[in-house]
Image 1 (cartoon, rainbow, N blue to C red):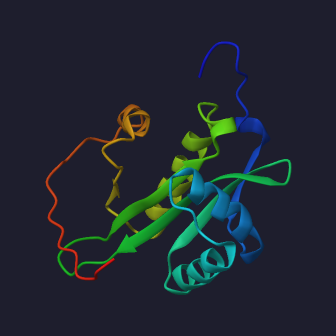
Image 2 (image 1 turned 45 degrees about the vertical axis):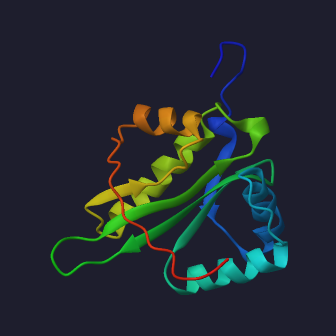
Length: 152
């Protein structure tokens, strides 16, 4: 945050996403480089929340300006892992404390689900996001194995 930009964190309300948020969520997903039809997004939101995932939105003056998608993975051998699947704040409001508020709300929700640790993946080109997560106490653990199983 630069010295001339006031923090908006006091003006932000964090709540669970509702189906009526689908259009705003689609716009935010598009900012990440994934254009998505709002009806498709609404269907995905319904499916994710029915499966137990959570989507929290940051709202400023009745406008959704960011969101975080949370997932909990359960294991037999240890407490579950929480995962921040997606976290985005609209470009106009970045670097003003909103991402930090969303991350804190995500951490609290995952802690309440009994998660023993939290994982965040971030694309290699998202260097500003990497700096943000490092500032927030996350460490980089780069070993992962992935096998695509569907074409497309």
